[in-house]
Length: 487
Image (tube, rainbow, N blue to C red; front, side):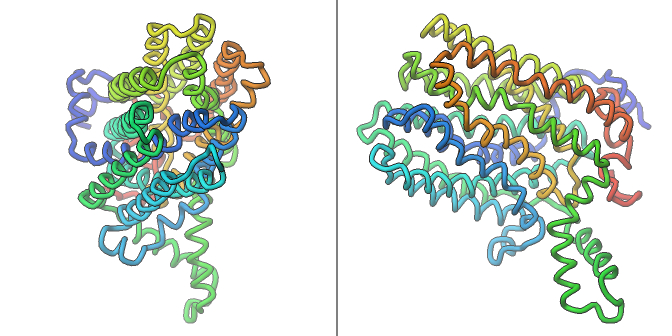
């Protein structure tokens, strides 16, 4: 072990060395794709909720219609296709990852153009269908982008992986925040209102498509490793001298749809797998409930479109981006477990500020403070969460395994949060009580996290410690890799 490595393991590396992580050119690619991943939420997130509210829909209807985003929680069902299927024309020219990303972005553009010509005030069905197209394409894009990131900077580069987690999160919030703020501003000032706002978002999507064409494709031995797995399955299914077409098809389907998930369970064990997936579902459920209704809350409190755009949009983007980058350094220095635990408590505390805001009324100072506090805790928890999930993902079945875990995380943010508007209505519009309830929702996940840490330590070693790095335990990061795999 070199002196440099020893200093790193002992946590004595000079602070400025951590900032050098952000000068890696690969992080620029990851930031751009993070922007593209967050951008659909500028279309179907807060702007969508306020558009529906302006059109006269009830809080319950807005919450239910927003559940179209539950499609994000289902993208693991078709994620294996992004690992195995080469799209004619797209993948042959751009590569496996960029080919699928480009196809998904064309779908987002088509849905955005379609939603521009709908009017929820006169009929909600066309708006809902267009939103569903956007979400389906965006969910597919997320699978491709997450796989691109993990293959570009894998877990064998632990510090780089943490930096990549923070950069992709910063890009995500930039994509969801700045275009969304622009849409709010246009909706409140332009003659065409929301029609012009969504036309603007369509133009942003065109630019993102052009940028995707310029990005490099990550290098990977994924196809060779999958071919080896498929060959082994074929040998189990048929006679070696005459494999047969049926066994070839079954082997392909097995490696595509079954082996990615079977490998994850085999590597972690059943009990640990259940604990991991349970934590992922529960960790951000309180934040999801709060976030779904935040923009509606701002409007009901009396803030204008322009005030929401400036505070929640522009200022929110600036602080969120800065906090995301800072959180990457904190997560590396503190360790994943401490990062998740502390950020979970802080996330709950930030929701209590919104309770105070509901009691005080439309106070701009408190509004700004709430947004800053919420952005810091969201940034901290998101970076630690993404690093945690990325660490557990195989390099051979990247899209499939990451999509499964990310989909469960999206489950709380989408389908489980569909009842957020109903909850406010049941509480009689008592926003203070609503935000208090969202604050305590994080408790079950933190209890599970403590239990999960001991399971992970027992099976994998102290993966959460700031004094250990995954590449010091070559068999625990991706056990499917050969012993002589480069680290």
